[in-house]
Image (cartoon, rainbow, N blue to C red; front, side):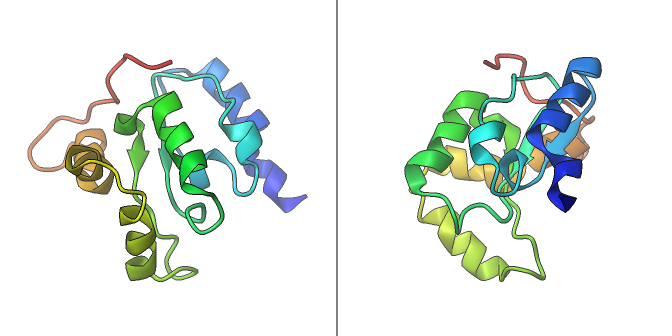
Length: 129
């Protein structure tokens, strides 16, 4: 299975061994393996992106990810060129998050994580779980 290389089980083994290592788990942690990825144990270095997931999951399921791991651990992703970034942004905005949550996921989390805008790179805040 070509998707097994990035399975949530493999990711969990990496997180267990390197809990502070910054990792962005694409596709909400595992393309079409969301029942597994939502069960990942929160880790200091773990973040997610929304690419290749919003089209397939109901709003309640996406919100469950945000609430389990914290909105500060998510980055907007479009998976371009497979998906149209404008359509993915429409899907994301249709979730109906607060303005602050949108700002975090659409840019602030990226700026913090990568130290852009004159900031030093910082992991997501430690209150996870």
